[in-house]
Length: 284
Image (tube, rainbow, N blue to C red; front, top):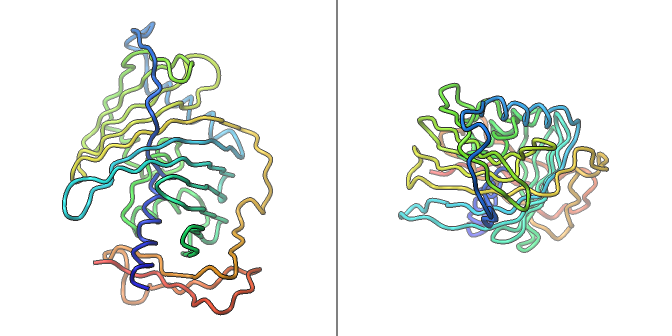
């Protein structure tokens, strides 16, 4: 069980990436923007408004990220992710590559499954996606850059009022000319590539976390944006195979008090009664 607890701790880390981190660099050319002093904050606001106006949306990402190791140095992670969100309380994503994971959020709980290892974990979640992103950061010690970028996380570090914002240049990503918006604050330096014309939906994102040990970096490339996906409630419900084992979801010790250790039950509709109900467990 100790091995599987460690496994799920690693699985949880990949939520960082719905949480997030980046893909191959396909920027092919660059030039000075038409107005190098353009309003970066205004362009970012248009992106946020476009996304928030959609009751549901989906997108794909190719991601690479640094993960600091306890003994020093960093681990490089590369994943692809398919994400579907319905505001304000539904999310699904599937991750492949260096992490194998399906994640389901239904406004009540978040369930994570690794098909490779045939394990699953669950924790009680707040009623909105924004609050759930906050819980993941506070209880599991994970930044959520994509949620922050897309305006889903009101407490995120990216949208710091102290940001120094500039339109750095124009650059072509995947054949699309984009404005490269650069933001800097005390915690993170980050850039986002937004198309010059058409829908202002991000094509690429890069961040460097200056106050995190090792100053890890993340890069994400977005594709296949759909602001009207065909989805149902079943999209966000997990169907856990009977043979999968329920294991603890590990929380940070600082987030777990003596009375708030949660015991999760297997979701309704799954007939396996042999697997023990997982607990949320603290780490040192």
